[in-house]
Length: 23
Image (cartoon, rainbow, N blue to C red; front, side):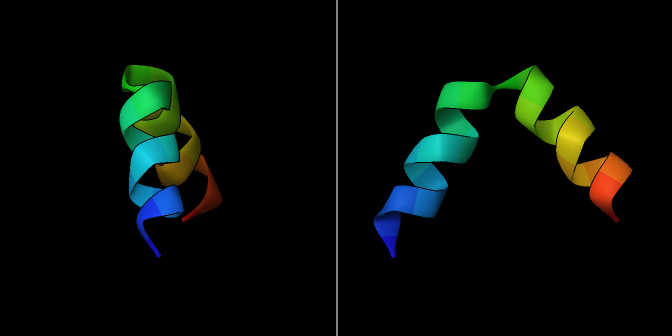
């Protein structure tokens, strides 16, 4: 499932913040 990794890379900092918010 590389799509997930690509999405995270595309999001960048926003993706990381969203991930932390979800966790």
